[in-house]
Image 1: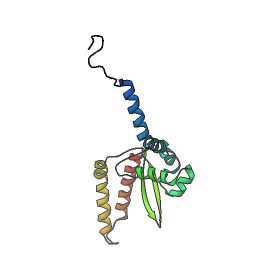
Image 2: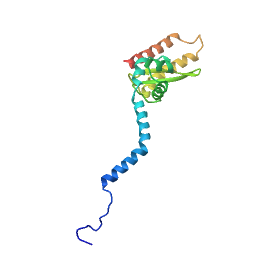
Image 3: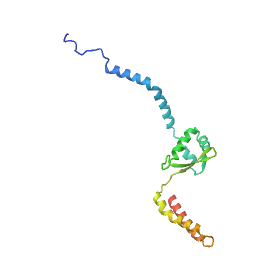
Length: 165
């Protein structure tokens, strides 16, 4: 053995060759999956929530096909977006929505969220009004006081105006 040749010399490929072979195998193996994932992701990125809010956040009931036709989007995409908006205790796109079944179709009612009021405040301020209305509702026509009902209605209106500011 001569001193000019290193002891452990082999014809092993260098690190660059190993990486390029591994990368090409990886690309061949996962390219179809990555392409499908990119197509799905790009489809999700086109947000239609703000368009739905702009056209339909009026508190009225609208059918799925009306919403889809108006904003020129697929019903599946609209349904997925509206399902997200209708989730309880969540707000998406600055609105919230309700869903109801009408025959074989589903309709949605969408509301803009301008101001949030805590449930504690609602309970604290509305409970006396509700109790007063229940008490008047239990009375018969002779003992019921229309003026008491009017006062309770006025209190309710004042609270609603306060919260709407």
